[in-house]
Length: 109
Image (cartoon, rainbow, N blue to C red; front, side):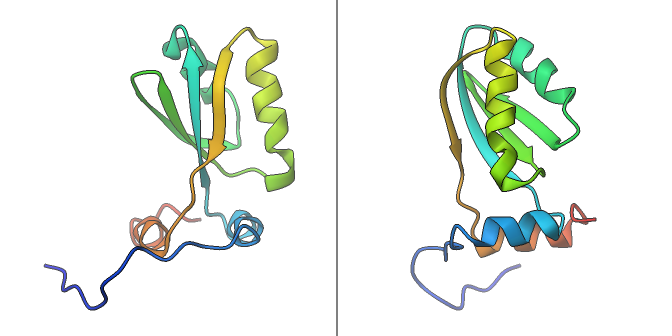
């Protein structure tokens, strides 16, 4: 299947790469932990055009954010203003493997 050619941890992209990824159509994943009903938060996220996909694992939502990096605060504000109790809101660092998988699956426009 795959042959491992390099040992060590996955490479991390610098923070400035997020802006380049957004302009290339690569969504950055946001990890959102909520208090209460995650189904309500998922429904709200599905209304947002910059959210390409959102999944839930317990109280944690992983949302693929394809908007501008300097506008992500609007997403947090949107959730809070609609009554979602957000416990944490963070960007998950993408590594080269994540980007490769997105590109080869045809996720990137």
